[in-house]
Amino acid sequence: MKNFTFDIKKYAILLPLLFTISIFQSQTILGFYDFETGQQGWTSNAGSSDAFLANTNWSYAGNQSFNLRDDSGDNSSMFSPMFSLASYDKVDLKFFFSAQSIEPNEHFFVEYRHHPSASWQTVARYVSGNINSKNADFEFSTSKIFYSKTATIFKTNFTFPSSATAQFRIRCDASDNNDNIFIDNITITGTTYKIPTKGPGGITNHLDLWLKADKLNGATFGTNNTNVSKWVDNAKGHDAEVVVAGQEPIYRNNATRNFNFNPTVEFENDNNTSGSDMTYLRTRDEMKGTGGFNSNDIFLVLMPDPTITSNMIPLDTFTSTDPLGDTFSEDVTGFGYGGYTARFQNERLTYCIGTTNGPNNGFGHASITSTTDLNQISIVNFRHTSSNDGMHLLFNGNIIGTHTSDPSDFDSVNGGRYFLGRSQYWDGSFD
Image (cartoon, rainbow, N blue to C red; front, side):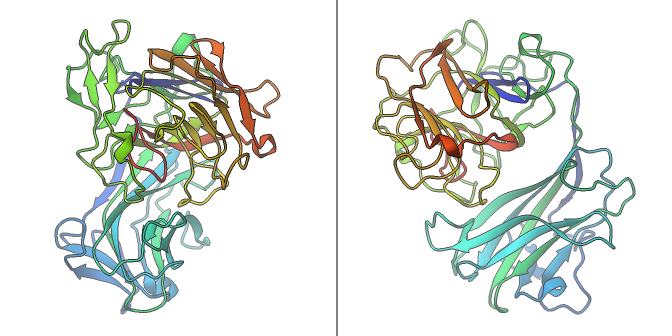
C-alpha cells in the first residue's frame, strides 16, 4: 500500500504514500506496566480474592499479570495510579490479555473517572463469543489465546483534570471464579494535539490526519527498505502504529518503487489468506491509529498490486468503525477494493459505513464499472456531498462512484480510529 493522507476541513486525507515522523513530539508515555516487579502502582481492594497479581503462564510476557475474575464489582477490579491529564487531548490505554473460560456474552470493561468522588464512566466493553464469532471481541476458550486492545478517551468527551486525580480501572464481569482475565503489558499514552503550520495544498484548517511517506522524521528522507513501526501524523498527532513487531510495512525510496520520484510505504499482504482476527497480533502488514479518521474529505495516493476485479477477496485499505456500532462487529466503515461488502454486486471500489446483512442494507457508495483501470498510481478521493447526506467517489479527479446503497443510513465519521491495510474484523489484506 503506497498511501499518504491529508485531512482537510475535518477531512481525513490519507496519503498512503507518505510516511513521516513529525518534528514535534505530541505523545507522552504516562506509564508502562508489565507487573514483573510487582503491582507498579496498580491496586486492588484489600483482601480481594477476585483481583490479584498472579504468577502464571497465562501472562502475555514474562511471568506476572493481573488476574481478574467473577463479577464482584470493585473486588473484581484493578485500579490504575492517578494522573493529571489537563495537558492532553487524547489518552490511550493499550493492553494485552488472555481469557480463560469466559463464557459467550460475558465481558470485561475499561472504565475512567476524573476524581475519586466521581462515578465511573465506561470507556470500552470487551465481549466474549464463540470461535470465529462475528459478534465478539475475543473467543471463549480454555486454552491460551492472547489479544491486544486499546481503549481511548478524548478531552471532548471526558473531563481531564489538572490535578493528579484521573484514574482508570479494568473490571471483570464474568459469572464465577473459574472465569479469568489476565491483564498484562499496559501502556498509557497521552497525546497533545499539534497545530500544523503546513498542510497539503496549504490547507491546515481542520486537518485531522496527514500521513506523509516522503520523510521519516519530518525533515529528511528515510533509508530505503526500512521497517515502519510508527507512521507519524503531521496533523494533530494521530500516529499510525503496529501493535506488535512483525506487522511493519516497508519504507521504499528507490527508482522501482517510488511514485513520481517520491518515496512510498509498501504493504505486502495476500488478500486470499486474510482471515477474521480480533487478536490484532498476527504478523500481517497492518497499522492502526486511535483517532483522525474523518469522512468529510479523504485523499489517498496509492496503487494496489493485485488486478482489481469485482469478485476478488477484498483489499481492506483505509478503514474505521461506525461511531454508533459495537467494538466487535464485522464493521467495514471506510474503503477497500474488490468484493468489499455484500451491499453491492460487481463492486470494485467502495466506501461503507458500519455493518450489513445483504444487498442494499447499510450505507455504501461504490464504483461497479469495469472501464476504469484501478491498477495505476492514483489519487482516490472520498468526500461528502455538498448537502452532507452522501458520498462522492473520485479517481484521479473523475467521478466514478455510480451506485449507492441505503442512502438513509448515511452518517459522518469524525475523529474515529483507523486501520491501514486491514479492517476492524479482518486482518491484513492490502497489497
